[in-house]
Amino acid sequence: MSSRTLLFLSCLALMTSACGHSTEPMNSSRNATAPALEAVRSAIQSENRYPLALGTRWTYDVQDSLRFRANGAAEFGGWTSNRMRVMAEASRTTILEGQTYTVIDRLTYFLDLPFPEIPYRTRQYLRMDSSALYSYPDAGGIGAVEGRDMPAPGFHESVLLVYPARVGAHWKSSVRSDSDYDFEVEAIEPVRTLVGTFPAARVRGFLHSGQPGTEPERIWYGKPGVVRSREKRVDEAGLSNGQRGIRETITNAILTSFVPGSPQAFFVPTAQ
Image (cartoon, rainbow, N blue to C red; front, side, top):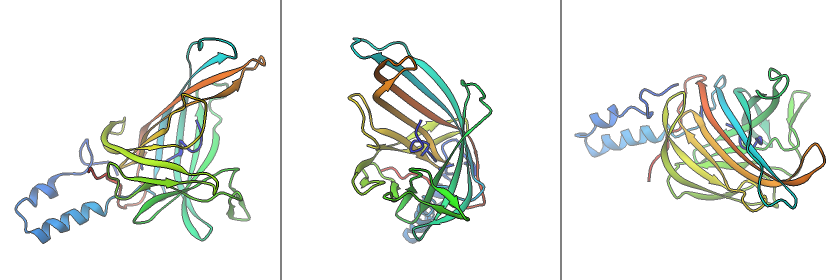
């Protein structure tokens, strides 16, 4: 699973109902005047935000399913699976190229490998304004040098999600000047997690290249942040015995725990 995916890594105050936002304000406004109704809509619209408050914590269960086809073989072998647990926290803020980002520290535990208690550490850098959610890549490893985060040369921030998230919304973004990727909000649909069921914006993105069979990554953004992700990748690979071939990997992640940070507005997708 790539750091982009758990892109990733990273939308995580629990909702007052299974599907999220309470409908009571809208019900009470059915007989309201037009200005009053518009004020209710504006209040709901102001909540269209990703939860980046410091102290916010997310946990994901992740499964990689893999199969291998040796060069010259007609069929793939059987599937094998690797389980992971990803724990992320909005730990601090930092400034990169004049913009203030929330730093998401991530610990990935490989549950099926030796020493599953030893995590792999990664970071995600997110910021947000009224029009979009942005990510600065940890490409090449952004290291803290004398209290400063130093980005890798040649990389810049990309747009993960545009606001408001409406079905059909489409945009281009990139992490380097020589690469453009297409994103689209395919649907607003419910996603069931251990934390609850959330209306979520399903974003389809061409995030990488690969062999035929590779599919665009899909990320579901709900009120707690990223509530689910799926990626299918086919690429050239080798086994420990030196055998070369094609590896197919399907990675699925689902939100299993969410603890909000300090009070703030949260993202609620808007259907078309």
